[in-house]
Image (cartoon, rainbow, N blue to C red; front, side):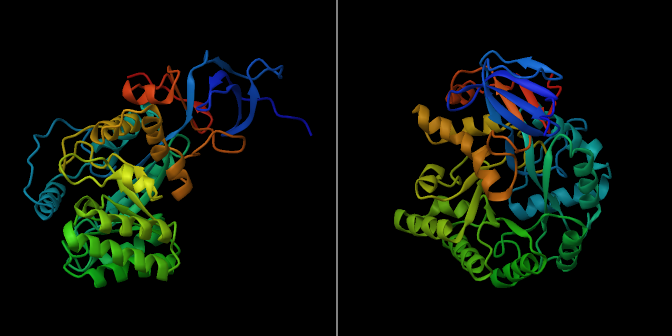
Length: 397
């Protein structure tokens, strides 16, 4: 069998383990890893990296492409006092403003994320009586247009609740038939006032359609911890281990040490993952302690300049830096390990991103002008090179 000529060779790429290699790419896949300087047939295109550090493409595990306003003129942020109030304020904006999502900012956010090394992401899309399934249809089309650059998973997200917004249960089912990858949920008690009813619908749809679950859980205190226990129990009963994510899980920040340890062990054993955007204030789950007990945690950006939040922390390197600061991490090994939460962990959990650099995986690669992993984070570096789906991307600001 004739070995195909590589379409692209990255020369003198330094991997995280220190090896200096050439990376051959054929089509959208890594074809071979060769020791630097080894004789090899010429590639169609060759790029000298000079020892730059190369990582797998980064993953943003939680974003709202349908909410961002990056594509429109600055809108003064009017912070509503509660989650329910923010939901209603956003719906009022959508009732009075009809702009295609690509023009509103979804395309601008994807471009900005790709420049920062994000080559895969999970986006939630609101399903309610205002948007119905329109925004989902737009994101499905956007996913197809961007398939050669960014891998996108879509969560059908009941932002207004399910039981408190009667059409939504039917819309969620139709969303899964249309192509949404996961079914979402939102504060079964805080929004719908019915933990069992809300979770029964979500888990029923997931089991019936063979999909995963990603549920926003802002509810805190004992109430939120009880909801986590219920999600764990339903995951076990439905055989959904490895397919369920709890986003935010603020209640974990309220747990005392015995309760935290017991809940963390149950999350690990059931195969329920935690997604965190490393929020400010006092509501961030204790990620280092969860990691120490074997809980799978990955990171996401959540709201990017939208009706909920004016923040624009888009890159996953910046998100890891927030974790470094938040948890007072100072050792190289602890800082470097944060990159697992945006590479190998989401790949292992959900198939987002290649997660590693080896022959056969999708050629999503990010190069940094750094000698060591923690240097990328503490200096908040932008990539010097982004390769997505085997093609070099334009990353100029």
